[in-house]
Length: 76
Image 1: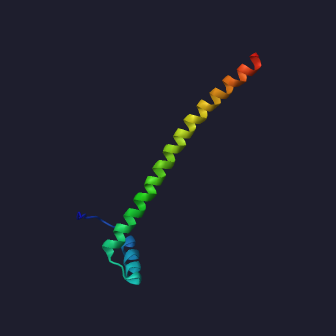
Image 2: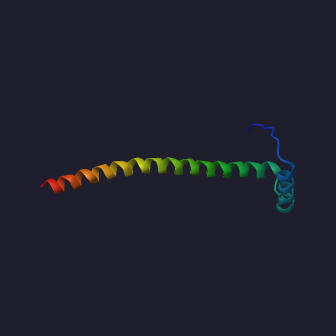
Image 3: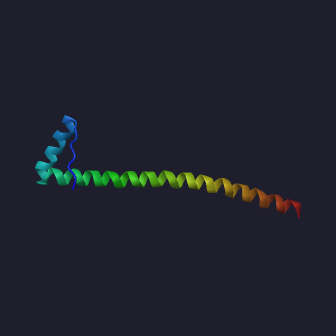
C-alpha cells in the first residue's frame, strides 16, 4: 500500500469528518472507497464516450451501405 499526501478543502474535510463520526468508519477506508467508486464512474464514462464514437462510425458506414443498396434497387 502506498502513502499519499493530499490537500482537501476545509468544507469537504468537515463534511467527511461528520460522516465518519456518524458511521464509525476509518478515514482511510472511507477515502479508499470514495476513490474506488470515482474510478469506476470515470471508467464507465470513458467507455460510454468510446461507444458513442464507435456507434457514430458504424452509423455512417451503415448509411453508406443503405444508400448503395437503394441505388442497386433503382438500377434493376
